[in-house]
Image (cartoon, rainbow, N blue to C red; front, side, top):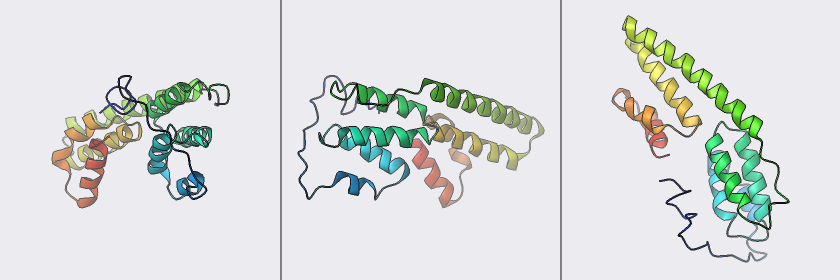
Length: 172
């Protein structure tokens, strides 16, 4: 599901309800409990709904996203934050150079991994083929485009850890 088209931020969807936080709803303290992708998801969920800490939520989400390789979500989060006219002047500048550099590094790494995979396939080294598929799946997962590659390697997953990684990757 693409949150930009079919999700709660679709043009035809009703705007999210505005929540007036009380002193008993400390958004910043609640967000400190989470880390990584969970914190980013919660910040992006809460930001349109809480007017007092909206700017802080978007700034925090954008800075957290710059620590990852997920340029697609960074672009979507920036578009979502820019759609609020009251925040446009206060938001940080979109870092196009970071996004382009990250995408280029991921493309170069993907090209290298696929070349290794093809070499292992030609030499029929099964263990290396499996490892290469897992590495490529991890790269796609980090860039949030993991369903295609992870689905191709689903038959090779054997341990519970690998199954959990597969379903986490496929659910993106």
